[in-house]
Image (cartoon, rainbow over all chains, first blue to last red; front, side, top):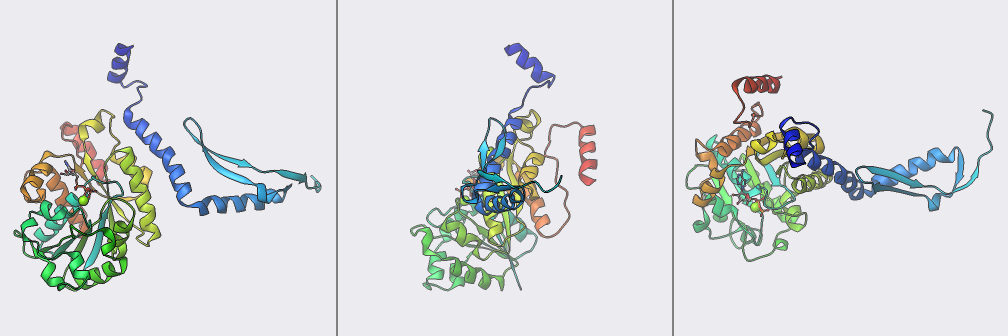
Length: 92
Length: 266
Ligand SMILES: Nc1ncnc2c1ncn2[C@@H]1O[C@H](COP(=O)(O)OP(=O)(O)OP(=O)(O)O)[C@@H](O)[C@H]1O
Ligand SMILES: [Mg+2]
């Protein structure tokens, strides 16, 4: 195993270098930092989401939640939007 | 004379703000500019010892803003270069002894007699940071190639922009080309891409910084200091010269180097 690691390193084959780990961790932590430092960002996004969804659904705007959540190695935009009812389809 | 006020900041402590201020200030003075360095790290003054001027301090920045002395009386003349001065921080007061408004007035007064006013910012994002950036026209952000330092730099860039300092430039300090080469340190491209900010220069990890700090003589004075040479090139960029970012790879073969030179020249 150790030998394999060394060989991988020598031939630079799918050995993940520590700088790649550093870069990836930074990218993820900055998504969060930047979003939490400017709450206006999430609020603006929320308002635009409401605008679009309202065209299709009758939603509970006060209960709507939008958040950035950490997954293992990605960040997800998670939205919880309670639906009160569907708009009557207008043609198709 | 209408001097330019540049703040040197970082967020994270110990990444090289004071070293950068001392070396850039000295390099600019070597280019016949009139330069004043302001130490705003009240309570933890250091720029004086890095410059080797600690024995000449009579008054400090708090004395000036409180009117205990004239601004001129507090300015310490450098022992090597004509036109280079230091305004030391107070050692016994705390950061709230100066207000952003007072800093603004102070830097504005200095503009009349200097080409460059370099402000050495304390670590952190509190009062001391707010004071240091108050009168600035431009900002230089110093970061080392580490996750914590780059993260803090990102936060600082956001705060600078919120304060109207819209185009801060980055100095990457303590880069180790050997570690970069074996993939154990983020390279220049990685950091610039993440921060999306203009690169002002790269300073290698270099023992001569420690030696020159021991002696109280900035490394830019030494002809064979690699870090000193990097700072001299950065000073030329600050003066508006077009100096390409150097390849810090001191181990690469000639063909590699040539290829890199072509790439950098584009
Ligand atoms: N390029 C370099 N190579 C080697 N050592 C360095 C380099 N740059 C800075 N150092 C060393 O790192 C230490 C911290 O540097 P410096 O005091 O300039 O940081 P700082 O950002 O001003 O710190 P603080 O946040 O405490 O004010 C010093 O001991 C300095 O000699
Ligand atoms: Mg310092």
